[in-house]
Image (tube, rainbow, N blue to C red; front, side, top):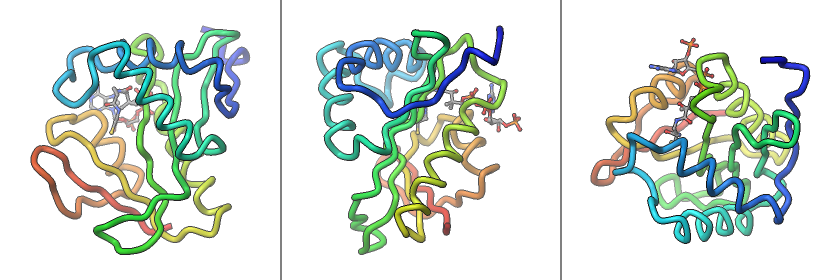
Length: 157
Ligand SMILES: CC(C)(COP(=O)(O)OP(=O)(O)OC[C@H]1O[C@@H](n2cnc3c(N)ncnc32)[C@H](O)[C@@H]1OP(=O)(O)O)[C@@H](O)C(=O)NCCC(=O)NCCS
């Protein structure tokens, strides 16, 4: 694949349908941690967009969305009892995985939080989602707390 064609931009509202499709494809095999109905997936994309449109970034190969990160700089963490940067979602198309794109998207989210003056990032990940957990650990996130089968991970910025 030609990397030159990849671009990263804030999501446009008209693209949320396509992102819902990408989300459903990306979570194949991990359904217990995801919405599986198309209308739920779309409602979730709309919620992510409402939370923080500026931090919702889409990676495109030409016109085709191949990954996204939903970073929310307006999140109040009940556990941290303060405003933190929340990485609500991170997704890479299965055929584009394993070449550093997930890591790059995560780094962009962290840079965005820093630009907003935040000093901590938080996310929740499914406890058996090894690919994601290993990515987050490599980027310096530490496990700190749990809720059912969700693991809370945090990183000081
Ligand atoms: C998690 C996800 C975004 C990773 O995307 P990616 O582009 O493949 O990730 P990268 O290529 O940047 O890999 C970064 C790290 O992830 C981990 N990783 C990636 N693929 C892995 C695999 N098959 N097995 C174990 N770890 C893996 C590794 O730690 C890797 O670091 P390395 O390259 O130094 O070995 C992607 O697998 C995905 O979309 N998963 C489904 C959605 C999801 O679970 N999102 C997380 C929600 S909390």
